[in-house]
Length: 338
Image (cartoon, rainbow, N blue to C red; front, top):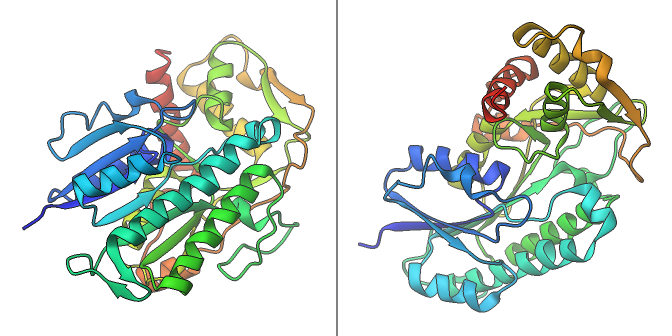
């Protein structure tokens, strides 16, 4: 009998690396092949804790390279794909949108199309041995655009992406959807809210606040700091992905959110308060907070209604923001040797 082998793309990134560790612990009978291009967001050191696992293999490569993906399918006979790989930094998408179009749209198409050809004989005809093969596409709540003061994004919310990043992710979501409706391919999509936790890229909001605070630099906050995000602890997200991959209904989308809406001012205030306690300086870290010019097209508020995954699959977030941020700060203080 063939061992169950899953292709995970973008597994050296923030969410992908946290997920691989969780997935290997939960599924000791599954082999994981991690394909990552190791761009600015991918860091091989994120995977040190799984590098010696006998079921884990790393391949450096690009999802835009179709012949490489075909070669990997022929070699490993994947029973599943969990697709994290994406250009994801909104500021970078404003400066250089081309890479986002290539990776997020063409790269997703390559993976999907090669998987379909490998698993299926034709529309709604699955090859023997691949009856349970599934493609799980990881996406973002940013595809829905922005919210006003009230309301939540649900799976029925119309797409209205505002940045080149979210537009490229929206396009990839639609391609995945089309392969279910056109070919009957076994796909699921999850759209998550803002993740935080260990192993996040240094340039993101929470690592930036922690890093700048402990190095005595100005802590930059966009605009008036009133932008609101729904914060999801990365391990809660990983649990949700694993659940949808295994038990989600084919062709469906599930929103994963933490029910933890907080504005950026609150985030910086809480982080500085915790640092004042655990790593006190002569004056409060709050004095380093500095407001900077807002990002172009900066969405005001994102918040997810996670009722569907909670009711249908029994998922719920274990961490609230206040418990998750303590674990996060602890991890970064170790990382920065502070």
